[in-house]
Image 1 (tube, rainbow, N blue to C red):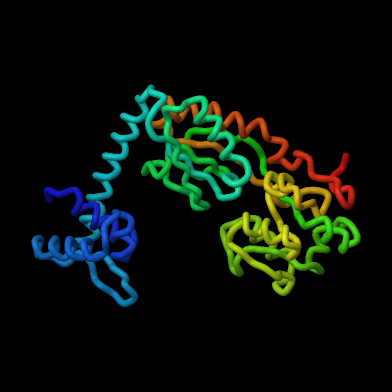
Image 2: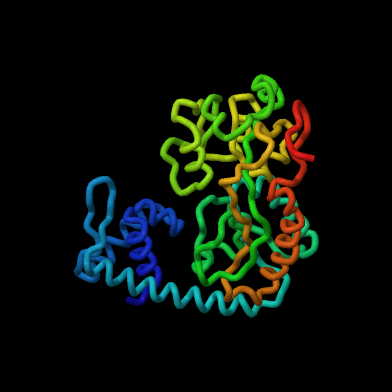
Amino acid sequence: MNDWNELRLVLAVHRAANLAAAAQQLNIDHSTAFRRLKALETRLGVRLFERLSGGIYQATEAGQRMAAAAERMEDEALALDRDLTGRDHRLSGRLRVTSSETLAYSRLTRHLAAFRQAHPGVVVELAIDNRVLNLSRREADVALRPVRPRDGDLWGRRLAQIAWAVYATPDYVHRLGGPLPSVDALARHALIGWEDGTTGIQAAEWLAKAAPHDAFVYRANSLVNQLVAARFGLGLALLPCYLGDGDTALVRAMREPVSDLEGELWIVAHPDLKGTARVRACFDVVGEGLSRERDAFEGRGGARDLAYPISNP
């Protein structure tokens, strides 16, 4: 096996279980991936994947062995890359940052702008993705995560707690007769929520338990879109306080944040990269900048007193 690209193809198909998805990951077209895989199987004289219905590619025993070998080689290459990058003391080059859509929309970008102003030699790439990207595989250099990291080998720190509250337009709160007295009252009002059956998102699961199915009048898989829907008066939206309090068109429909919901904002990187100058500079500028906004993240950032007293003095 002389061509690393052949091993990368086998590994990508094994991970995706689909040739088209593997081709997209490798930035080649489907016909090229099909031709390369067929040529490799012909040359080796062994079938690497069973082609199943629905476009599913299931690795044979030979395919699994080859994918495992490719993964070991990839791990070694990534470890070497991280080791060399971790010794890079230049404030130049590319820095790939990942964050959720809501954080990028409301808070993060201004701090990335400050980072660029301080270090113009660094090119910032922002991957807005609600998935947890793999830092070991260099899918990102620095991650801003709205939950405590589960990966035990990451380096970073917690910047703030994240509070959640219920929001609506001032007119909507007027029609309610004032802020809701308790969480139990949610069930009697029009609600904006996540797609039906959403799992793995604490706030979505909490809201699904707090109100009956027929209370939801609008659903979206984007918190930013849920905020926009609340602006147009579609109903009540459960939003992180740093997003809802910062929107001038909304007020809290309940005075206090939801006590059962509290997340954490973390900035993390792979420990191999903690010596990289641009990574440390990002922690210093972006991490410190976000940390100074702790009151906003924790629901003490100035909920507006518009139609009714929304927050305690």
